[in-house]
Length: 79
Image (cartoon, rainbow, N blue to C red; front, top):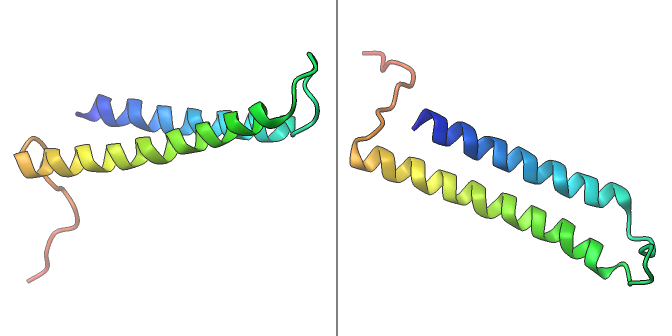
C-alpha cells in the first residue's frame, strides 16, 4: 500500500509539473501553423488528470481503511 501511495503522489506531482510546462510555454501560435487552442487543452487535461487522480487516491485510501488493509496511526488519544 505504501508503494501505491508513493506512485500516486509521483503521478500527481508529475501531472502538476506537466501543466506548469504547458502554461509556461504560453498560448502563442504553434510552429506548424496550428492554432494555440491545443496547447491550452493540454494544460487543462493535465490539471484534470491531477484532480481526478487525487480524488481516486483519497477513495483508495478510504476503502483500504474500511477494509482493514491499513490502520490509522495518528496522535494517541489522551485520557
